[in-house]
Image (cartoon, rainbow, N blue to C red; front, side):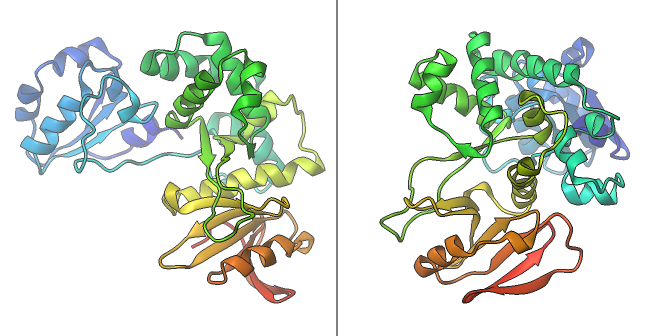
Amino acid sequence: MGKTTLAQMLPEAEYLNCDLPSVQRRLDDPELFFDGLPPDALVIFDEVHRLDDPSLLLKIAADAHPKMRVLATGSSTLGATRKFRDTLTGRKTSVHLCPVPWDECRSAFGIRDLDRRLLHGGLPEQLLAKQPEADFFAEWIDSFYARDIQELFGIRNRQGFLTLLRLLLRQSSGQVDYSRLAPLSELSRPTVKAHVEAMRIAHAIHLLPPFHGGGKQEIVSRPKCYAFDTGFIAFERGWAQIREGDRGPLWEHLVLDALRMQFRDDQIFYWQDKSRREIDFVIRREGERVDLIECKINSDKLDAGAAEAFRRIYPNGDNYVVVPHAPNPWRMRRGDLVFEVCDVPIV
């Protein structure tokens, strides 16, 4: 279910598709438009970035009609487009829709096969398809470039951009090495960084920073890159089925989605030291408390060595092992540490 479908489900809303020229003409005079609505109206501007000056429209609504409720949707972070001349600070709340979470696969779609969710991805059309459709993923990537990247960011090197995107899909959940990506994509290192930032803003990827601050042997600068949906990773890697070794890294993507639905991005990290001991996710809480999260298909496979190294530096916080099927959480001990084994999401 996409953002347009969700928006159209809101009762008694004034829905406007900003793709339509007739709607664009209707919104040429925002003051006249808003004056014709009830003071407490619910107004939906779908694909609002199609307008010439969307930030002016939303600013007038917020400042001149404070009782009015406005939902504005866009295919990318709205503030990323050059059409937005005002950041609307203090006037908006942003909501990011991720692909269908694992817990909703089971509760809303009746899908309990993890491999299906990993292979098909979380876009409803493909999640419900009998088989993943290569044409769908290829067309989506082409449309993403034309709709979000070329139009909103003005990036004209289609081949270089898409080559870089496909490289990032193939190495999703790995650390980003701009110097290595540059020759592979035939782009300069600064261009690679700029393109990666555009992908991040457009939500095609998420850059997960390393957590550090207490240990001299910690990795401090290189982020990990996660693609927004596992179906595109499987498509780009040419997988027809999920193999044993594929589940763990792809499961991390679903756990990350669940975490991002509960915590701000600036609270979520990974941790690694120079001995390559790694914690999948770290959640920074208040004070000196930091929770660690290990993602496992089978909790019995947990090696607590990395967690023990982490806790020697950061002793305060809870320890979690997140597995795909754990309706009733339980606790287990590994060495001196106690872990809660749970399903997603974590609270």
